[in-house]
Amino acid sequence: MVRTASASTSAGPTLAVVAREAGVSVPTASKVVNGREDVAPETRRRVTEALDRLGYVRRPRFDTARAPRLVDLVVHSLDSSWSGAVLRGVEEAAYDAGLEVVVSAALDRPGPGAPRSPRAERGWLDRFVARGSEGALFNLARLTPVQYAALAQHRVPFVLIDPAVEPPPGVVSVGSANWQGGVTATEHLLRLGHERIAVVAGPRRELCGGARVAGYRSALTSAGVRHRPEYVRHAGFDRAAARRRTRDLLDLPVPPTAVFACSDAMALGVYEALAERGLTVPDDMSVVGFDDLPEARWAAPALTTVRQPFSDMAATALRLLLRLRDGHRPESTRTELSTRLVERASTAPPRDGR
Image 1 (cartoon, rainbow, N blue to C red):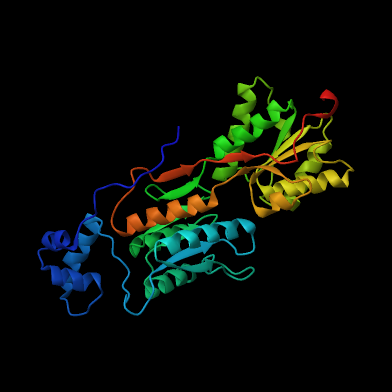
Image 2 (cartoon, helix red, strand yellow):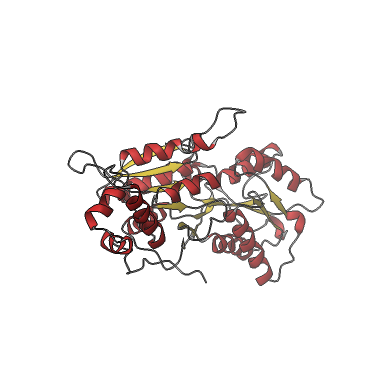
C-alpha cells in the first residue's frame, strides 16, 4: 500500500538559529545569506558552514513590490499533449496560489551531436536564481547528477512530477498509481472474457512503465491466467514504436485478442498496426490505453484508457514545493495519486469466444 505524503509540521532552522550556531548577529547572518560583500571572510565561512550544517533553505531574493511571485515549470518538450496537460494543471494551481508560471522546455539542450557541458547545464539555474523564483517543478524524463548537485548547492526547492527513473534519496516527487492502473486495465479485459492479453510497454528501466507491466502481470496471476512472456513487448512511449511491436504480436502463432498499451500514444500505434492488417477495434482486438489525453476521445473508436489525474498531480506538486520553500519536509518523499479506468468503445468481449 502506498502512503500518500503529507507535509511535516516542523519548520526548518530560522536565521536566528543559524546566527546563534555561527556566533554572529542575525543581521550579519542575513548579509551572508543575501550575498552582501561587507562581511569578513572568516565570519562568512562560519555562517556558510552553519547554513550547510543546519540545512537552512535560502529563499531566492526578489523585490516583491516590483516583481510577480514566480514558479518555474521545466518540461521535456512543449509538443506533446502530456506536457500540455501538466502545464494546464500547474497554471491552475499556481493561479490559486497567487503565482505566475515560467515555462522552460528542458534544461539547455545541446544541439545535434554536441556534448552536454556542466556549464551549459547550469545556465537555466543561473537564470532561475536571477529572476527570484519561488521554486521549480520538473516534468522531465530525468535530471543529471550535475543538475541535482547545482540545485542542492543553490538550495533551490524543487519537486519532480512523474520522474522516469528513481530519484536520489530525499528528492520529493509526485506521480500516479501506475501499478494499480496496470491492474485495473488488465482486470477490465479479463472481465470481458479475454485471456490472451498482451502489453505494449515502455522502456524497461522507466519507473512508470515497469510499474504498469508489474500491475498487468499481477492481475493475470490473480485471475489464474498463464503469463505468456512473448506477449510483453517493450517500446518507446510513441506511436511508431508501438506500431512495430504490435506487428510482432500479430505475427505470433497465437496472437493476442487484447492489448494493454502503456500510453494513449502507444494505443494509437496499436490502432495503426491493426488497420494495416485489415483488422478492426474492438471486433478483432480490444485495446486499452493509459493517460486519458484528448487523443483518447478523438480516436475512432474512442479509446478505453486509464486516466491519470494530471491537474491533481500538478496541484499536489505545487503545494509540496511551497512547503519545501518554507522549510517543511514531507513525511514521505513519494506521493502517488489514484488512477481510474474510463470505459469507451475500444474494448469488447473476444469474438467467437476466442
